Length: 594
Image (cartoon, rainbow, N blue to C red):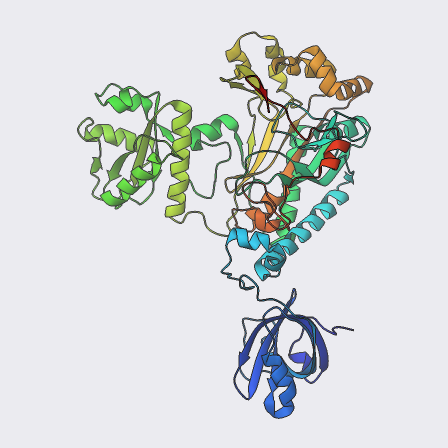
């Protein structure tokens, strides 16, 4: 055998045992008469000792080993004289008696340490080396444990895991599809699923009243730290349920996952309407680890001769508790921060509520201290607080102030590691109007049910009435990140056709795209609803990280490229021909054909 123990297993109770270990050389330290070597596998690190006095030849061999050599070592466990209590195996070491080099290694392009000197692109190109680092391994081990706990909980709740197809039909709604040409059907294409949405609804019609799947999904969209062209969902659907049933079930799942992977008991799961989330925090996924809600000052600020406020659609502010001692330089830094193109604000107004009860603002010329005191009352400010105010178009200003609120939370250290604040956001708009295309799009997806009271309003021709339609939809937000979202679904053919009509589908287009689902609704479809969690995102949020890449074994970069295997790449002409795809395109320029 190559090993009797792993490199993270041996303890003081193993002293005097003869053992065999195999792994990678982490570091070597040559002290003349003695050479020390750290041997690593995914379970930990064990120190090896080579002595010139006991075995000079073996010690010389050890000195020649490079980093990341794969070796097999046999020796005796002894107690260390200088213990390393930061390491699980730090009380013992192995006195080497024999060694075999299983494979040599080139010098790695970056250090295989917890803190590495490799940049993102370099580590992604040599991902197999990056995966040897403990932080990345621990992330993937956590991901594996989380998946097991998901399956354990849902199975105990009578959910059935069902695999749905990866080669499906392209649909026009949502993000761009990745398409796959069909060799056997020339000129026709499959699409990779953006989600298993229609299939899980079909499963409800088929009588599988509780379905789940940990499933790959694909979206051809621009990428960010929390986006990848392929990602994983915990996809779930339930029949004969109300919204309350779904919220309670998946609140329980979330509690189970935190308890059995992090050992944490989550607190309350408050609920907030979409409208209130935007009104109070300027976001449909507010971070509730700290307060600082918005207060509307529009009525208190108009008509005072300050053109910025007088011309604004809305004037709103936040109260930074205890920050009245912010210097002018710090306020100016905040002003420049909100003016950046990423935020796009034109400026920032401040009011200091000094400890002596006086108020000082950047608009003292236009407003009396009594008027500023009215602002303070609306913002629930007290002596020692700093009020920050923005003005402009309603939607844009609320979004900008929301970004400022988050930045203040970061600067003031209000987003504490290990603090988790979940929130259900409810009652999203059913539709959103796009000015460029002059049509409605589904806020979630076309199969989301309207609130029962709003069904009758779907017959209206008034755009404002249609904008006011509410969906029976819900998002689960954790620390300002949407980790899951779902809805009660439409299960009536006529209502589904009405929703398609509002989204601009003709009867023929709806049949061509979704005829199979509409047909299924005619054979006794039950009431149903569901939710999908972003599995990669859930992993990162639970570990207090911003990027999902380190929780994916082989991620893509911001251009959607796999740096390790150099994909996407071209394919041979013969393959293109088999797929009935053109290898050349003729273009006429004047009288010349190119």
